[in-house]
Image (cartoon, rainbow, N blue to C red; front, side, top):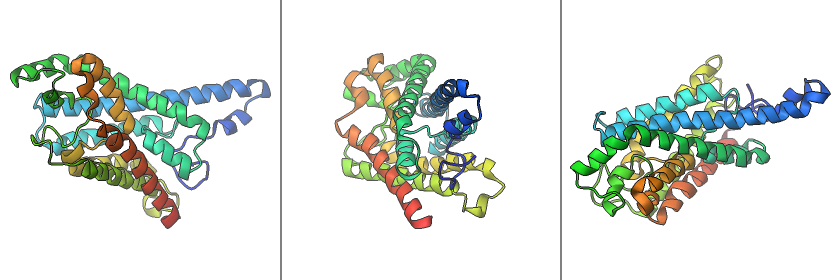
Length: 292
């Protein structure tokens, strides 16, 4: 499976136009629409799986205390991403992240007319994952708040809201909110997403012969990259790297009683949305310009 430019594998679906051209003329339009819908559906389902596994691990570790150490949470995120890529890459290209969709549009000729649909599907998948997390862990989170004298919606409730959205510094790691500045948090998200995008573009580059004949390992390696990045960056910002992963569950937290605390301070937008988008452009652009 190759990209539209023919220089990368795995992360781009086959062109629906080429698929439609093989169908009888009277069915071309229907085939095209069906293919696009399947791509959006694949992004929705795969992003749901990624975020469901990931924030479930955060809830299990930071709220239920069922996991020991950050690496276990990071590993679940990594394996969750790998599984999500395995089930969707042949249909949608497994973007699962608005920052990566935009990077692929800018640097790898992904069709711009599909960008809004992909991003919407990703956000909706993450939102449903947030709702599923609330349904499963709602009583556990409420008990955690009771045991720690946390009033939901108060500034202190970021300690429980972190099961959905992200905050800096990581509320489970530090109690001093001034340890990580907005500038440091922004740099962490930019750098982390740049590394992720660089690795994705490098691993899927057909001229990279390291994985020749072993392309099936690429999703695992991308997931492993995310696990490593979370281990390094999560103490600072919870390691977002993905605007959809953040905004979807935050919306659920807002309506579940956390209110404005769910969305955090105004700097949240810069750190968790602008940061990953900028980082993905830097990482993808560097790989394309320096290694092609």
